Length: 186
Image (cartoon, rainbow, N blue to C red):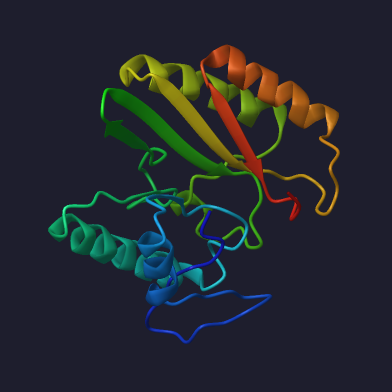
């Protein structure tokens, strides 16, 4: 989870409006990470320009790694407001892994149409569960990983009852692993 824009037109910034450098992401790639979620509560910290620059930066990184013979995957930001959720279908050895990141929380609501964002209300979650079923049906896979930047309280190990219910519905819909993050604890 890259919990920050990667806007190379701006300097690196810390809380509350994050921005990281391309070299930070390159260091993660060099350390062996190759699948990244770009959607979380900080995705919009640098506004529309930050989202666009993040897309440009990750495209550049993907192409640089491809030239070296490495595949790197990024998803969570859309290329247009009308686009569907972005995801990766990763083929590794004999495995087909579907990776879909979403966020349920944004620090700013503007530009949310460009982010894999779902609201936490019942109707939005039901619509998303239907989407998950269709996505799995259209993308045969051995493993379906869903990364959820959850609208949970931070710094607590407790999972809310509504989150637990939602996760169970997602597992029933075909997700194999739910990687819930945002609590700021291990």
